[in-house]
Image 1 (spheres, helix red, strand yellow):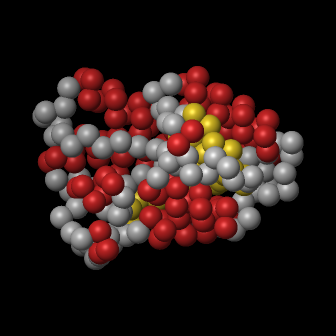
Image 2 (spheres, helix red, strand yellow):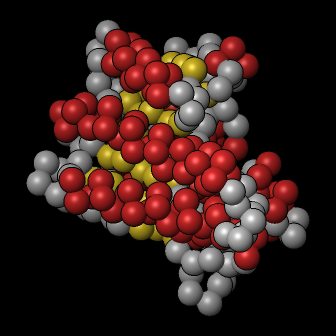
Length: 233
């Protein structure tokens, strides 16, 4: 099946930012392929323009299957959104090898593998795009407890820039979006503010949609997003 709609794959789309991105893209006429841990529980499973697939960042075979199912269903791929991620609140002195391996496997290695799988299809798209949801923790280390997380997000930002360089000649564009606290389950648990004061998932979804809609002649490297005013961001 080949569709005329532009198609985006979104990892970690069961709730929060990922689900909001899916809702926004569907409302704007996109088709979406959603990678989630439990497809049967997805709110999008009955949407005709959505494909819901099993995705586990620790299982490379699930990544390959997800890509195959996406192309089999839609026949094209225009955008890849790396949204899945985890936060381990440990300092760089507390973190053990298992902690390091887990957070880097989810936040860095899986997005890199998915990008490799998606790349041949994005090259065929009129305006192929990769969007990486990193974090402001990929730009600065705000606290000791965010040290390990920040290490992984610095690497995720570097991955996004590496992909930008790979797409320099063929027109596949890569953008890194770096939010501070967002009103999701994770953000609400970590922030010491009312969720209404934080950046909302819908705000990030609007930014992702804007980036995906841009032509290859508009290459945006990074977009820092904060719910308030920070010294640097």
